[in-house]
Amino acid sequence: MGMIKFQEKEFTIREVELPNRGNVIISLSSLNDLLLDDNGGYVSDEAISIDESIYYFVDNSEIELSDEELIKKLICEIND
Image (cartoon, rainbow, N blue to C red; front, side, top):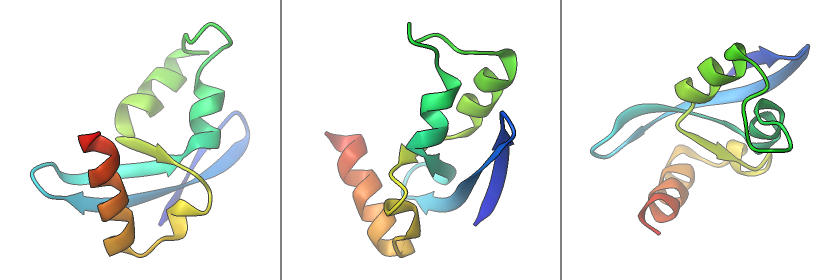
């Protein structure tokens, strides 16, 4: 696990390997909320760059799941 900083706050990031997609970066939904304004647009160029580097956003409790559980959750979410 690592950290990414945006608007003076730090957010957990995590890299996992998904079948047929390779290594992807996962972060927190609370970070995603800060990247977008009330109209759904990005708040800055930095927000765009961060969003493009993150494959999926999860809840705080989900970022702590085991690799197996997190990958299973992501596959289910992506295939829905």
